[in-house]
Image (cartoon, rainbow, N blue to C red):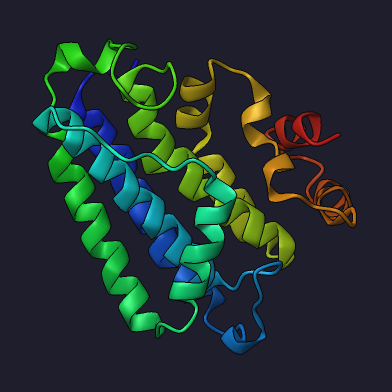
Length: 217
């Protein structure tokens, strides 16, 4: 059980390494072909950065004991941020991500160990603090990497991220495989099921894929 900030920071560092590799792996993609319905890898990193920064702001407001203006409509916020970030060059997106990760790790140091199991903090919904930190520092970012790798048929890296995040996904979700669901990505043309079928046919020996299949059947 992740009941200390140091352990959470280790998971955030893993996320950072996964995203650095994601950028290097996807650099051959044409960024100009992206759209809000079909994000590029740069769009995905910019989106992840926005939510990590948002989470830092919320956690800092709790430490400072000041009100926080939460997002009422996350889809609307995502669209606004996408429009603002799509014109940024990759180097600026990478720099913003590095700064956001560093700040997140600093902010979470402000909480005491006993705070991490609290469920009564103003986070917008009832959740243990440590689980909230892991959600924004690992689960959400790596979920976007998995979805992008799946979308681009980059199955080897999909499996790499899947396997090196298995323990934290299991801990966060209490073993509920729905944590691997891609439902929120609003796949309307059956791409997810098609890709998962291809993936499972190619890598029949990978038992962990059963979790993804179960979550997206």
